[in-house]
Image (cartoon, rainbow, N blue to C red):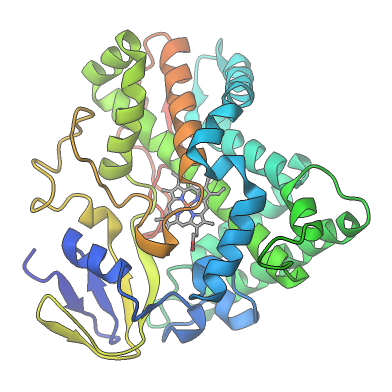
Length: 373
Ligand code: HEM
């Protein structure tokens, strides 16, 4: 609160309060293009076509519209509910597999396989290839917070190599779909000419790359953070058993209270920007502490309290502005079904270790394992 806009030693700025983060996310003089950043990133180092999360309008808008058109139901709140039976079936079968086991790891046995199965199915990526792309995705995520001062170059190189490997892998899946399309996103992007024209193969691969990473490294944390939060608030867990409809507000509160994306590290100023009486010079890199904004006491009453009855819960869990999360409706539905079913099916679940071990990333927050018995 004392320094909502903080200058770091390397010349980048950290923004941590709700109003300033929201202002920045809606400022047209801000760039998300990784090629404008002072700190290197694997995507910028190795590729000419970053995915649309990392580029600016008008290209961003064209690619987002095209992807939205073809990704269809999962990003449209009205239609996403049509996926409910299919998602509930996947969740039930995962719970069946461990329902009679003494010790369960909510991450490995449930919160990870569920969204991965869903996004693979939507994209047209074989689920059995998961061990291959999982390690690439991990290396890419690890390198997102690469800091040249403290990290060995190896971290960046591994991320860049993994970006190439994933790119090549997705290219191999795309190629045959030009002639023999299936009913999946890769096929639809490869074959449909929309009002915005067709995506190039490079653009399709970057988009699929983004959706594969975003679709399986974020929701796992929301589900796991959710289960952990419920186990730490047994009265809320009990309320959810008694009032199943509470789940909608509960998931919104989780996105505020324990959000998976803590930091958006990739914004750069196109021109000098004045914010909270500080001038951020043109060219500076800006990092947005979304999780801190969602606990700003000037915006949320008693922000450190988990309160699913909270009104006007305009959290920053999915960001804001033109890059607002594209998969929000899908992630919400997945988490609502996952937590509702866990609470309904598990009899008196108990945390084995509290706090559980966390993944080391400052960007994405969630336990690596969450053992319950
Ligand atoms: C963007 C969070 C799930 C696809 C974002 C952003 C956040 C976010 C904070 C904004 C990034 C920025 O401003 O630079 C989350 C969380 C999720 C989640 C917390 C789960 C709980 C998903 C899923 C998908 C997805 C399931 C797709 C299947 C995307 C895409 C963007 C995005 C494509 C970029 C949008 C754009 O640049 O226009 N997400 N996300 N996300 N998310 Fe998500």
